[in-house]
Amino acid sequence: LPHAANWTLNSLDFFPKHNDLYVQNAAWAMFVTSTTVGYGEMVPTTHFGRTVAAVMALGGIVLSSLLTASLANSLHWTPAQMTALLVLEREKARHA
Image (cartoon, rainbow, N blue to C red; front, side):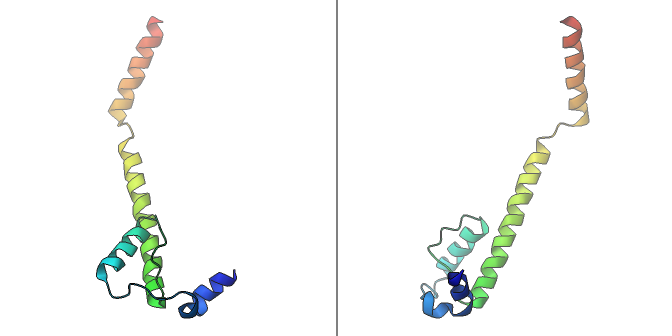
């Protein structure tokens, strides 16, 4: 808990700034954050950067859940497929 207070209140003393000027590093950090991998090799040091990272993390969670939901929805059987399965099971039970 003391480290969390340091991270939010006086982070510039505790966490040194690195790689602030490179767009590639910022894009990589946001990609890693949005895919919820979070390697931790780059962390935002400003309040605005932390806010952007938090929004990207929430956006990544939403996008991951939407992808999972759409995949699960595509695996559901249509009513015609379910009817065909029930007919096949009924015929199999009749001949058994």
